[in-house]
Image (cartoon, rainbow over all chains, first blue to last red; front, top):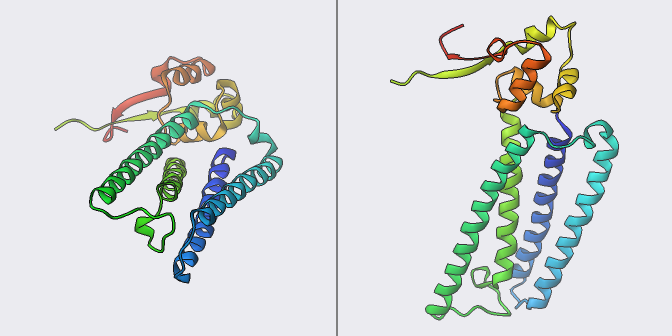
Length: 155
Length: 75
């Protein structure tokens, strides 16, 4: 039987994937339109996506806690803590490498004259914050997936 | 070549001889979740020393009677 924490992780992973698909879909739609996209459009999109993520997390976790009343109140035990820490480590590495890669790309862009645009049609020249959202999302997915991997290894 | 060792345990047997203690009962007594007891019992998770001693204490056994660190070939 799957524990409350594992179910909670599945919920978070699924929400992350759904939100990422909505985000990616909108970015691709911007690019496919072939028109220049302003930073304001992107900021608005990021804001809406973050709000949707928070709302979905809260609502689905409340629903899960109501369904799993026994498991939801239990404190984290040593096995769960171990898995969480191992997964956090993986997420941390993904985030660190991603941010370093992002900064390096930014430096290369400015050194070789590839201007980072406020209005753009090319994702490679997208603003720093747009890439950071993707990197943050990747690190979160890596974290959830690693923790789930450890839980699934036991079954 | 280094000998391959693995952690085995007799928790299932000890539970049986303790009036068929359930995994949930054992979990509550040692302060972990039932899933953790299940993982320890199946040898999928190696508990901390603290939890290992708690389990041994519940069954009134020395820790060696509960957990054995043995070669994979040994039964």
